[in-house]
Amino acid sequence: MRLDGRTALITGGTQGVGAAIASSLAAAGCNLVLHGLTEDAHAVATATRCRESGVTVNSVFGDLSGPMPDCVNHLLNQVDLQEIQLLVNNAGTFNEPPFLEQDYQFFERTLRLNVAAGYLLSQAFAQHWIRNQVAGRILFTGSINGQLAEPGHTAYDISKGAVLMMVRSLCVALAPHGIRVNGMAPGLVVTPLTASAIEDDQDVKRWMELHTPNATVPGPEVCGSAALFLLSDEAVHVHGQMLLVDGGMSVWQQPDLPDSLRVQIRSSVSS
Image (cartoon, rainbow, N blue to C red; front, side, top):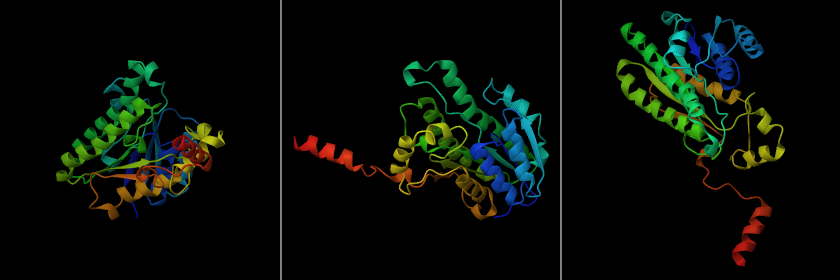
């Protein structure tokens, strides 16, 4: 799976899942334009690591959660559309208050970053690619939360459900023009954003491992190879799909219960 001679723009590409995607694409010979919120230590480290693969890496910065379409246009003004054949819509947020405390501003910000930014960027690139007869490729980072809900992440769940449908809708709109659109949906992975909730609380980690058939909560590197496949020529006939990279979590209706809980349930039923 090689991407020699191609260039990818990766939003949110400086840390976490985005950085893992960047590393995999760079190792496959792909030049990169990495977008991040600010030029912080994560941005510098990711760009440096990717350059070790011998590819060209440029960085652009900006907040994609602001008023639309201004913040998207700000990003587009920093890149050369002529150079980019691959778009990875990865930037996103999941931190939010509980549903009963959610205010509209926070909800709107989540939808702008997780949904609207990718929609508008995809439109801009698709328009350019069609005019110039480029068989571009678009990849969205979805989430298992686009299919399985959590009570504490209502805005996030809604946004990732929208991303799932956006992959399908844009596939139908763009496949006739030779543009492939797919998505990659991680389960729970350890990133700078999730590490404190997982690594610092072993009970939470064990609970997540219990709910995953392969009993693993990995790092973001598991997402890189999946993204590379979907962007490569090996996936030439894969259109409109959301590939779940979740250790099987999404297919397990009822995980095995801990022995202690199983005893409690049996006791309550028998009584």
